[in-house]
Amino acid sequence: MITFDHVSKHYRGPTTAVDNLSLTAPSGKLTIFVGPSGCGKTTSLRMVNRLITPSSGKILLDGEPTDAMDVALLRRKIGYVIQNAGLFPHRTVVQNIATTARLNRTPKEQALRTAHDLLERVGLSSAFANRYPWQLSGGQQQRVGVARALASDPKFMLMDEPFSAVDPVVRAQLQDEFLRLQREIGKTIIMVTHDIDEALKLGDQVAVLRTGGTLAQIATPQELLARPADDFVADFIGRDRGYRILGFADFNDDGVQLGHEPTATLGATPESLRQIATDRWVLVADAENRPLGWADVESIKAPLREGDLNLSGTLAVEGSSLRNVLDAALSSPSGRGVIVGPSGTLAGTVTLSHVVTAIEAARTGRARAQA
Image (cartoon, rainbow, N blue to C red; front, top):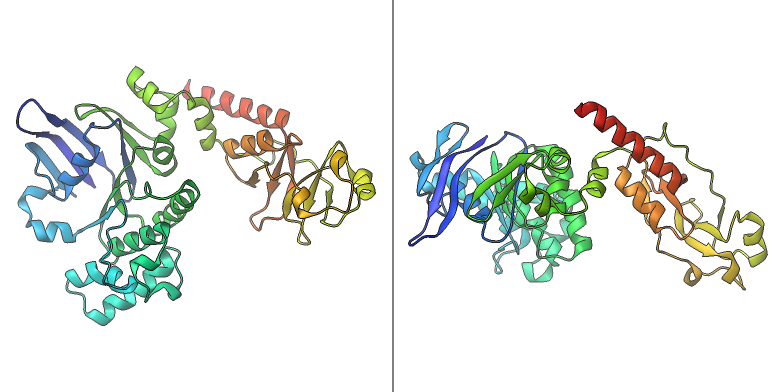
């Protein structure tokens, strides 16, 4: 547990970076700081490991004040992940990962074994072990940075916009990988991000800070979306609150009937496509019945090729949130959202009207729960 007890940070002149901040980051949970530029997110984070010294108040780790700890020992107890990873360019991947364990006086061979084990835990194969940072992509470097922070098995972790320097696709992959990892390791984590969608996706609780470093609201993502504390929080979260809250509503297969969707394969003739089509769109799948895309029957004049496919439709996995299912239905050129099983094989399709019915049922259930 990380506790901020009336913590403030003042600089010379009238500048206040953090003002009387009190909150608790629970043990084994991920707390995320969000807010506009200049609201004190990073300052608050860096006061935990005393990279910045508070002007007043106390920060406690499991009830022990950090100002009473030796600074070097304090920082060795806390994993620290920053933007752009900050890897040592002259060290290999495993040597980089082993660094924090070695600082805690772990024998070299044991530290390297731990580093090799952590490679796979963060989604990298052993083939990366002896590469140097310049030989890695940005996303791979961030994974190594997370592994390095974990190498000393810290109870606490601080993460300062760890995924912001990579492209959106890699960012989503890193977020998913990190959620999986956190379910396994259960560290007490504070993360800073400027991305509200990232905060809502990753956080067990989200702390919204105002300019001037005051706390506007701290709540679970669901509570933040459903009941913003004031106009500032509502405006910061944005106008898509109703859409975002669908990410916390499960798609109930028992409540929404999945339709049977006939499929074709590449090489199908125009005549065979017309025979199975229920409208102008036919879903195309591979030999394992994994969806590849949609074919427009009216435009196909020769045996079906990969280049004929419309790839605009997204897929939703069974058990996905209503947000994912709605996106699948809206993005599909046929208006039928494609649902797949965990292995990627076709489970069926769902129409937009069925999704809307499920959304209304979820909304009604939330209203009853809040009454």
